[in-house]
Length: 227
Image 1 (cartoon, rainbow, N blue to C red):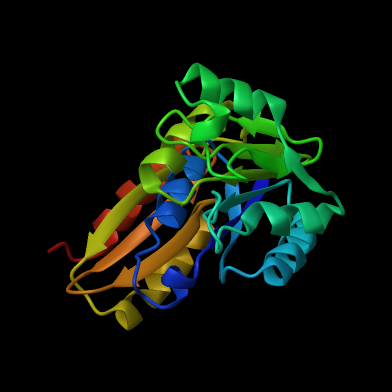
Image 2 (image 1 turned 180 degrees about the horizontal axis):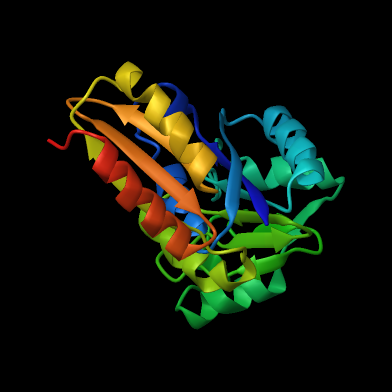
């Protein structure tokens, strides 16, 4: 299963808010064996959201959109997702019922709080108010991290893939000096390799077979200088 993650918010693009949601989602999806192919951040603009969501739903098995839910003037994500699918936005009976069960009367709710794209499945917000939505292959989650995490955990079983295994080897050598040994590693073992320089070089190995990763890491540790 491959997925695109789309985060929404002018504040993300301005650097006023750190996008921790994308990192958390990528980690959780990777744990489930799901491949994240794209992470994109968009402004609070209906046209941009509609265009990108429409493009990504054709390319990937699922699209997860976070941010911009609620009744305020810049909460336009539901409108953008609805536009991507050529649907209207309408009050959702299930979302209203959940909110009323949580103690909110219709009179307590700001106009638009329970409006979702027509035909969507409402996702209850256990950590907040604004509901999320699932429709076709698109999942719309809140931008508040605690709310996003709780809502994703309620649907994470819908994201499945092939488990992968990872192991890291740290080398106290320049990255350029390791190229020949990394090339030999790839020849010997069926693993993906990434190298990340810093004070030392962290070499990450990944494969679908745990024994292969373990053997490759053991071989590489014998070939490099450890810190």
